[in-house]
Length: 349
Image (tube, rainbow, N blue to C red; front, top):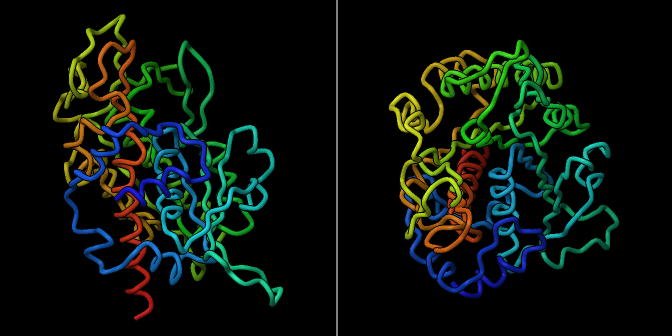
């Protein structure tokens, strides 16, 4: 395990939640999660997925800091494979518009270590990038909070859909729906029913994204594979010692806010934070046959000890939303790559 961890921690990304103390590292070896969709169950390795399927393709992560963790995990999981080389790149090398630079895009290229370019045809690479879009729809300041426009995708999201070469995989996720206190629509009406809000926005995102992709690829073209990654809802909370008495062990399983503890908030367990109505909406959309749901709620729900502030006493704030890296996001990466591998095997048989 230690050589893998050492290679992982040498990954060329600027970690936002790297946890290097030995106690945290030891927790990785105890990681257990429930999912039939793993690389081990698919009889495949990370190297198999990259070498046989992902080289020459692009994977885009779109969302907030939780999505950044997914992106870092994906890149660093590849960096931990001795036969793969991970290179930091600029926005242009990933095909991103220069005007996204101010929005802090991240971009890395992956290739087989020692790849030969003597033919001059270029080395086949996998492009991986992250673009920030906290709410997925367009947002602006207003009325003491954030004003959301359900009829427009966020400008960074739109920029990805307008790239010359569409990504092969688009992984969407954001936890801002659950931690941002003041949200309003364009009429300055406060949005307090978070399950209904999430459903309405994701319905809009699905419609707007589906319409845009249909224009780009046509009925006979290639759609990107869209992945909606759910969140660990019961873990979303940021404790501040000046407001809430610090806890002395691990992050609590549920938040102290009753509004977050209702049955309605957890929606349908099978889909984590996706409502049954939203799933039915997607089934009727052009994207349904190109959509996967990656249930991080099921995978991560029992690992309260894996957060960045779990078990730390005497701190002013406790972060129970983000996970340590290496850690829980690597389980999400494993499941995502297993889905990629199974799709590759299915399509090549």
